[in-house]
Amino acid sequence: MASITVDATRENISKVSSFVEAELELLNCPMKETAQINVAVDELLSNIVNYAYPNSTGKASLVVEAAGQNAVRITFEDSGVPYNPLAKADPDITLSAEERKIGGLGIFIVKKTMDGIDYKFENGKNILAIEKKW
Figure 1: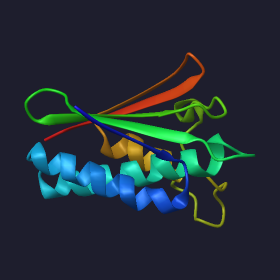
Figure 2: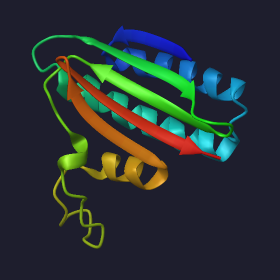
Figure 3: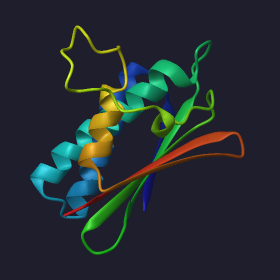
């Protein structure tokens, strides 16, 4: 298990992505799954950066851990505004980009590419975890 805590800023997204990639390499995660996880990490961390702390800069923490022999679980924590991204309806992808409401596509992609995703608000923290098998 490895963890990182950073200020929830755009500048730190690449730092966190590099950290996650290094951990995935240690777990022998294949390239395809690594790419999917990178998209998910970028999307979820961007949501924390953009929405968790509307009037300040807070912290974001990630824990990367093996979840069985060929799987990884990545847990995101922040103390920002409570928000469950899983409660929002999926976007209607049959509509054109112009017809669709803005937002929700990133979480939709995360839900479709990960094998598991869960959310809870506990002890004043948003806790979202994703799981990917290979």
